[in-house]
Amino acid sequence: MSLARLISRGQSGLTAFEVAVEVHLAGGLPSFAITGLPTAAVRESRDRVRAALHTSGLPIPASRITAHLGPADVPKDGGRFDLAIALGVVKAAGKLAWNLDDTEFIGELALGGELRPVTGALPAVLAARAAKRRMILPAANADEAALVEDAEVYYASHLNEVMDHLNGSAGLPRVTPRKPPRARLRAADLSDVRGHAAAKRALTVAAAGGHNLLMVGPPGSGKSMLAERLRGLIPPLDWESALRVASIASVAGDRSALINGIDPPFRAPHHTTSAHALVGGGSRPRPGEVSLAHCGVLFLDELAEFSRVALEALREPMESGVVRISRVREQVSFPARFQLVAAMNPCPCGYLGDGTDRCRCSLTRLQQYQGRVSGPLLDRFDLHIEVPQVSFGDLASDSARGESAELGQRIAAAREQQLARDGCLNAHLDDASVWRAVPLDRDSRALLKQAVEKWQLSARGAVRVLKSARTIADLDGTAKPGVSHLAEALQMRCLDRTR
Image (cartoon, rainbow, N blue to C red; front, side, top):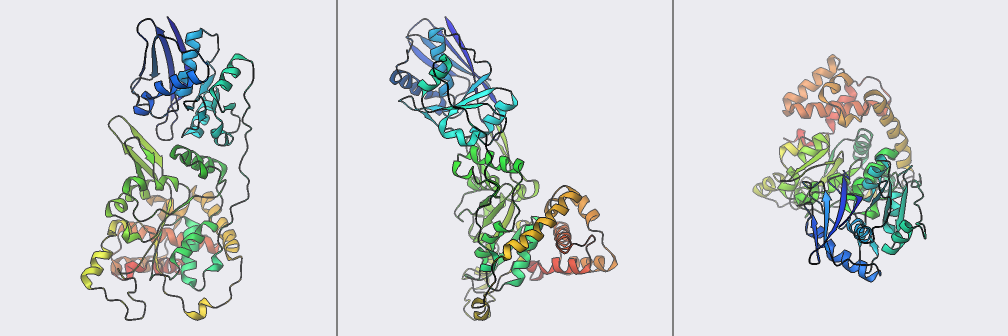
C-alpha cells in the first residue's frame, strides 16, 4: 500500500481554493477512480493521466488507484489537477522521497505528456504566494504568473521536465516577475468627432465622475464614435486595480486581455448577447461582460435591441458593483464596478425628431420600441443626452488634435480630488455622502425642487443629478457646487424633460 499527497488549486469565482490531491495505490484488479465531487472534465483526467504517463515512459502501476481531491464537499472542475494526479501516481508507485509540502501544482496534461494552460492561473499564483508556497505551472501560463511580485513560480512544457526538476537532474526555469509597461495603448482622439460640443461636455463629465451615460440620436450621428473615445479620457488604472482586472480575465480564460497593462477595460458586446453572457453564469459560474468591464467601461450600442431579460439583469450590479450567482452547490461573487455607456435610436427607423419628415413610425411602434428599456433601468443613468445629426459646416471644419490629452488632465485632477475627499468617484457615493458633498443653498434647493416636481424625478434621479453637479464643480475646481452646476446637470437629463 502506498500513499502520496500533493497540493493543487481549484477555482470558485476569483477564489483559488486549496485542494489536497491524495493518490492511493492498493491491491486488487487494476482500476482508476477519482473522488471529491469531480465534474466530467475531472473524471476524464484518469484517461489523460494514464496516456500521458505511458507516452512519457513513466511506470503505470497495475493497482487499484484512487485519487481523492479534498475537500470532498466542494465541486472540482477542469483539467487543472492532471499534473498533480500524475505526479501523485508516480510518487506513490515508486515510493519516491520527494518533499512537496511547500510546492503547488496546476496544469492540464495532453496525451503526449505536454502541459497545457489552465484558466484562473493568476488567482492561483496569488493564493500560493499568500500561503508561502512555490508553484509549478504550464509554460503558457508564465505571462500571468509574471504579474505577481514576490512569488516563486516555475514553468514547464512537459511532464518529463517536471520529473527531472523533482529528481534534481535538471531545474525548471523560474518566472521573472515583471509589470506591463506604463505606456498606454493608443486611443482614438476626441477631436475626431466633429461638432457635438454638448455631447463632448457630457462625455467629459461622465469620464470625470464615472457616471453612467445614455446617448440618444439618429443613425450615423456619432454616438459610437463618442463612446469609443471615452477610453482615452479615463485615467490609467493603479496597479492593484490592474491586477484585479487581469485576475478576472484569467478566470474567464481571456489571456489576450491579461497584458493590457494599465488601460481600463472597454467591453462592447453585441446586442444579441444573452443575459448569462452579460452578467455571468452557467452551470459552473463564469464572469460575464459586466465583470470583464470592472474598473472600465461597458458600452451597449443599440440599447433597445438587447433582450429585456439581459437589460433588467444589469440593474443590481449597476447599484452594488457586484454580481452574485447562486447554484445548488455553489455561490460565487464577481466584482462588477463598471461604467455603463449606452446608445440608442429615438425610434425604430431612427429618424424621429431629426428635423425632417423621414420618420414613418406609428405611435404604437414607437411606444413598443421605447418600452424595451424599462423606467427603472433608465433611472440608473446619471446622464442622458441627445446626439443630433452634424451639419455639413461642422463636419467639414478643421479640428485640432490632442483634445483628449488636454481634457484627460482635467479629468485626472477632478478624479484625484474626489478620491481625496470621499475615497471614491462621485458616481459611487452613497446617499448620505451625496448630501454632505453637495450642500444646497437656497437657489439650488429651489431649482432642484422645481425640477423634481415638474419632471417627476424619483429620489434616485434627484440624487444622481446631485452627483453630476458635484462632478461638474470638480471639473471647474469649485469647492461648493452652485446653481449653475446644478442647472447644467439637469440639462443633461433629456429623457426627463420629454416625459
